[in-house]
Length: 377
Ligand code: IPM
Ligand code: MN
Image (cartoon, rainbow, N blue to C red):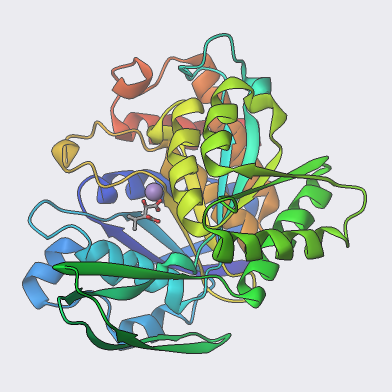
């Protein structure tokens, strides 16, 4: 019997509660699917940081690197300054493991509600492939007061390393600058993944997002790479959308979209919009994928501190992320059955959390989906 060891970082706020349900559902699938899962808990998150001062040590990263997938709950706590755990844990993991694909399915499921008038589940069904390691997320920048100064900015990655030596002359009172980076290697691999995904799923079109009309350097380059990669896929239609325009089209004609590939920051923005049109953050999952390394799966929502410990939050995004994790691990059948069970439970509408108009508890939704996996199989 195949045995998977999966590290779990349940994290902050509602993280532990939703992860519990995700594990429960995967355990149920494993019982009949003929595989075994051993969960390995990691305490990292805001509490652990406040107690020990550790966000994510090199030793922990090395340990996590022994496994193919990490199951992540949520991060963020009002006691910790914004950005600390986000950068120190979440982005740290994404970058360290070079999880260059952020896969975010935008699917409206029967039984959830979209704010888009007259749109049905068949109208909202596409996948966003978000680049996950570059763009303005590389985190290089600084500030400079009147008179100027010098600065050295460095990025060290598996694929390349990069250093900017800045000689700043400025008579502004104070400036801040942030440098975005897109590399040919980085853009090529994620765009290729998007085309391969379209090919595998029989989708006729890949849409690229940019702002090449204004941020000409970085996103003009992205466009060029997209055009280069697309030449290998003559049967797939291509198009470019500016990021502002795609926000409009996602609301007006979501049915147009099949696979969207986007640089990191625009991907961050449009997937929150995507989550809303697919029935809310409670049902929006994501995968941070390195096909040859350690991937990580999480709901795209945050830690919702005010619902912590109330057994109230919707665990579906996390359960769905768990299904995506099984798919990447090679347990496609179990993955499909979990997705099917989610669909079925939502469609029946008897067990659902407050955000979907119900009054069921987090654990009741998990129990119901776990049970459904077993009856459907
Ligand atoms: C997301 C989140 C993160 C991001 C934050 C928490 C760093 O918004 O996963 O979309 O910007 O990528
Ligand atoms: Mn986001």
